[in-house]
Image 1 (spheres, one colour):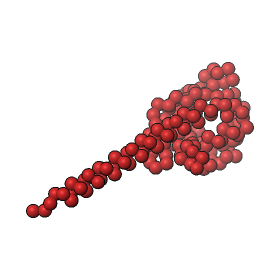
Image 2 (cartoon, rainbow, N blue to C red):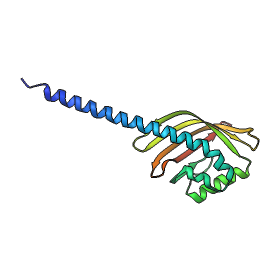
Image 3 (tube, rainbow, N blue to C red):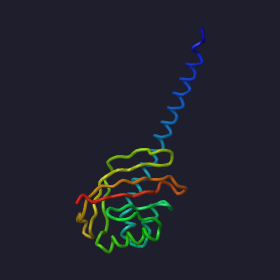
Image 4 (cartoon, one colour):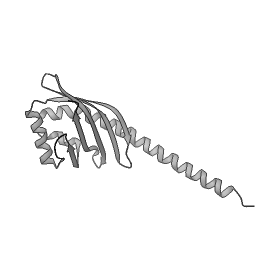
Length: 151
C-alpha cells in the first residue's frame, strides 16, 4: 500500500502557495485603492490648470477611450483632448467608485459613475467609467481610461 503522506504534503504545499498568492493580491489591491483615491482627488485641480499637468495621473503608455471617437494615445494627443474638454466648458467632475478588482500582477480595474461639471459645479453630464490602472515605477497610474455618457 502506498503512503498517503506525499499526496497530503503536496496538497498542503499547494494550499499554502495559494494563500500566499491571495494575500499578495489583497495587499496590492489595498495599496492601489489608496493610490487611486489620492489620484482621483487631485484630478480636478490638475484639470483646472489646463496646462497638461493632468497627464501626470496617466502612465507613459496610456490611452483614453472616449465614446464615439477613436482611441487617443500619446501625451500630445491626450493633452489636446483635455484642452478641448476645457474649451467646451468642462471644469471638473466627480468620480464615484463602485467596484475595484485586481486584474493580475501589476494591474487594477476601477469601475464607477462620473459627473462632469461646469465652472459653477453644476452637473452638465453624467455617465460611467472603467479605468485599468497600471503599477509603474512612479506608482499607480491610469493605463486605459474609458468612459461614456448616460445621455
